[in-house]
Image (cartoon, rainbow, N blue to C red; front, side, top):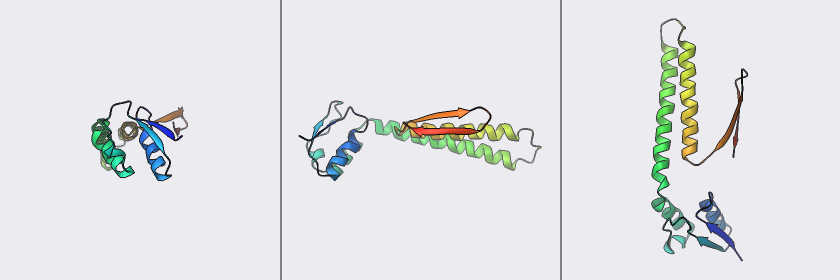
Length: 134
């Protein structure tokens, strides 16, 4: 008896590709009703193509990644302006801190929209962040 791959599982596509790669038999259950057909299951390439065209979350992922890139670029631009500003450094820390916050939140937003989640813990005053994938 082979493995059972359900589209309701988080890593269903990776599991199916692994079965193709290792030449294992598996039972495919489209319980989320993505519309994967028999033609899509003929090969791993067809499955990838079918999953990308029939998965409605791909547009959400694209928009999330583009939003994260925009937030990152805004943060980097603020940091650049803070460093190049000829005024005294009274606002330098505030601008660099705000830019770093934008860069960090944009990066985490991109990873979250791609389905990658992390546990993040920080300790006050040390500037140390611990980021662990879930």
